[in-house]
Amino acid sequence: MNARCLVEETEGRELDSFDLITALGLLKEHAFKELWRRYGDRGKPAANLNFTLNLEGYYVEMTMETLTALALSPKYQASPHLMQALIRRLLCGHRHGLILEKLRAYGVAVGDGNQINLSCSVGTKGVDLLVNRHPEAPEYRFRRFGTSRVEQEEQRPLDHYDLVSILYLAQQNLTDQIINRYVPQEILNEGSEEEKKVHFTSRAGNYDVTFTFARIKNDQPRQVPDRGNVSTATMHQVVRRLFAGHAPELTARELSDKGIIVSPGEVSQEFRLARILNDNLIEMSFKRG
Image 1 (cartoon, one colour):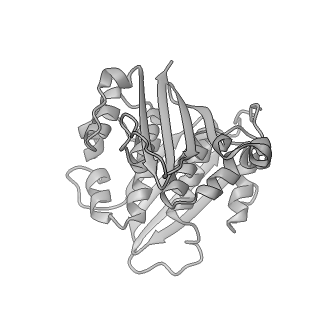
Image 2: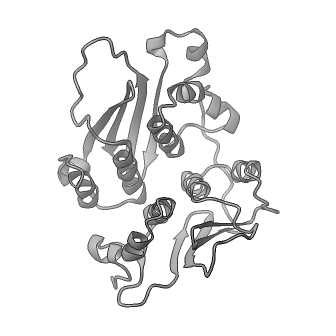
């Protein structure tokens, strides 16, 4: 492989969905130098950054560029967060009509929906995200879903999109919001406090990911679970790498860089991560197969 940027060179892979979301995250943090260091063309002056993603029903193009002045045009009405959310929904295979409905709720004009064009700016950096739906995109495949509020409203099972959303909400200590959105309605209405937990299994690449979020009491001793100091940001990175099909060595390195020792052999088979955060316990188990 002829590496075009530092990431391709050091990780020995082509850019993929992991990098589109990472680049938008760096943009949100105003980490422009780091963004261009990782993804700029090797040996060339800083210019535009170009990313592409070919999915089953969509072709995605994203361009980042330096603007000559602050962007005041109404064209730049989106945000990096909205773009990340759109990419995650596309990756999870959400119903096309649902995706358009969510964009319209944000005030984005989407027309007939076969082409979605979002633009945003952060400082003097501009981003254009273009999503073209394949003319012969497969029809949405119905999947059985549960009784949580999100599942009932969106008519789909919980998946990677929700896992990431819960991690974001947990960082902001929005426990009640998580419980109200993702706990089955019958438990929410009639269950005990101990029963009001979020628990589901979803697919990420070649892995089954079992996710649990539960409120815990802080008035009694509790032992920190094994690998229980993993930040939610690192959990997110790991899931995105698995979703993109990265080599076990890259996922193991992602963890070891944060002081969490999980061998590539474990990653290639089965491993667990956990975090106690704001009186909540987050557990994730990963099993390849």
